[in-house]
Length: 324
Image (cartoon, rainbow, N blue to C red; front, side):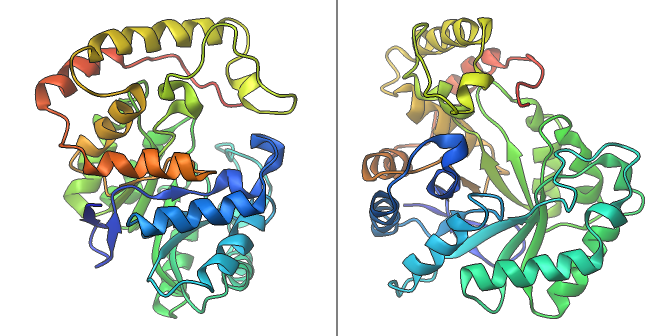
C-alpha cells in the first residue's frame, strides 16, 4: 500500500480507502450481512488500508456504529471521515436557502456530538458537510462554526462533500482557505474537477477524497444491456431507460482502449483517479473480502503511464446529472 499526505493536515492516508456506505444502508444498496462487513474491514486493514469513509445518513448511523465496534478490536490507527447531513434533509440546498436553517452552529454542535458517540471517539479525524451551495460562499457561516469546533478539539480537519449538481461550488472555500478536505466525484466519465477544483486544492494543500470512482458500478465493467437491478436498488433509477445502454457502449469503448495495457476496467478506473497529483485517497465502496482485495491490489500496480492517461481523457462524458 502506498500512503499520501492528506493536504496540510499532517495525516498520512492509504491511497486506497474503504467506502462504507453499503455497510449501513440497505435501502440503497441491498441486503448486507454484518459478518461480511466485519470481514471486509478486517481484510482491508490487513492489506494496509488506514482510511474509512462513512456518514450520518448511511443507515441512520448504522455504518458509523459498525465501524466503532470493529475498531474496538484493532490496534492500528485508522483515520475515519464522516459527514454531517443538512438539517433540512434536502440535497442540495437551493440558492435562496439560509445556511442558518441548514447548518447552524447549534445544529452542527449537536450533530458532531452524535458523530462522536456513534464512532466512540473524543475527536473526529475528518468532518465533512454532506452538501453545499455556492450561495453561501460569501457568507460561509457553517465553515466558520466548524473552525471553532476544530479549535475546541472536537475535529481535526473540516471540509465539504461536493453537491453532485454543482461540484465547482466549493472552489470558493478552497481558494479562501476555509477547508482542509474536499470529497469530490472524479472518474473516467466525470473529469470536470480536473479543470479547476483539483488544481486549486493541490495549490492550497487541501486533502482530496475521490468518491464514485466506479460511477456507481459502471466502471467495474460488470454491467451489460440486459442487467437488472434488485427492487429498491437505487442503480435501477440511476441507469434507467436508455442510460444503461449508453453507459455499456461507452464502457466498451474504454475496454477497447485498454487492450494491451494489462489493466482491467476497474483497475484503470482507480489508477486514473490516483494519477491526478491532487488526489489523497480514493474510496471505492467495499462490502466483501473479494472487493477489498481487488481494490487494494491496485495500489501494488505501477502508476498509469501518462500516454494512457491522455488517451483515456476522451471518455469524459458531459451527460448532466443522473442523481435524483
